[in-house]
Length: 253
Ligand SMILES: Nc1ncnc2c1ncn2[C@@H]1O[C@H](COP(=O)(O)OP(=O)(O)OP(=O)(O)O)[C@@H](O)[C@H]1O
Image 1 (cartoon, rainbow, N blue to C red):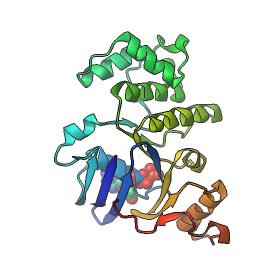
Image 2 (tube, rainbow, N blue to C red; image 1 turned 90 degrees about the horizontal axis):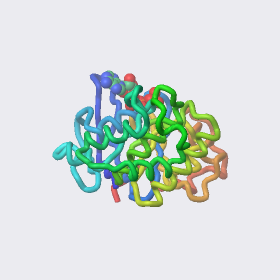
Image 3 (cartoon, protein in one colour; image 1 turned 90 degrees about the vertical axis):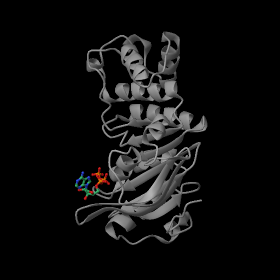
């Protein structure tokens, strides 16, 4: 589980993140939407301890990110938009290498089992990563999350540039990982994917979480209407109004 409490970060005069409170429960996917510059990646960078907050607190599986950064990192796997691995290594070699970095001993059988779960076709396992598509690279990253039994997954725009079949496969795998108990925070511009996967969907603007929608019984049309209402000030149709808003000022549970 991820707990974010009153988190703020500025770059000079730019309030990139302003008093963010968000709880990402285990076994669920939480999505953050928002226009460019809304503060989504800043949120991930803070959770990864790549940058320091000005104020606020974050915990990952009850471990304080600032007080115990290494321990908190052990609980999570981060999948950036472009999964960069060793180009000349194949998938199995890359996974052995990644496991060794985390001082985890991993057998070929465990790697094969993880790759099978991601749906990466076996004929590709021994090909160099340089021949992989974005979707295939992502599967290697997800196999690593499976091997590590990661409690928390941070995903940065995972479906940008994926074709519809690859997106569908991605949704299936992430859904499976959530069912197994991972807390998943996904930053995305893909409303369709957010609607398919998320339990709760946050919409950010100018560093603030403007709404946190309960995705249960929320139609894709209502999600789009809420998104454009917040981002562009479009009028919100009657049926899309507030019925699924968990809280306009989300509080830590
Ligand atoms: N390292 C940095 N130095 C200075 N300003 C930064 C830095 N990182 C982010 N910002 C600024 O903080 C604000 C929030 O940026 P952030 O990258 O979090 O937005 P985002 O919602 O992830 O956008 P996008 O959808 O384009 O990825 C932006 O105004 C951005 O220019």
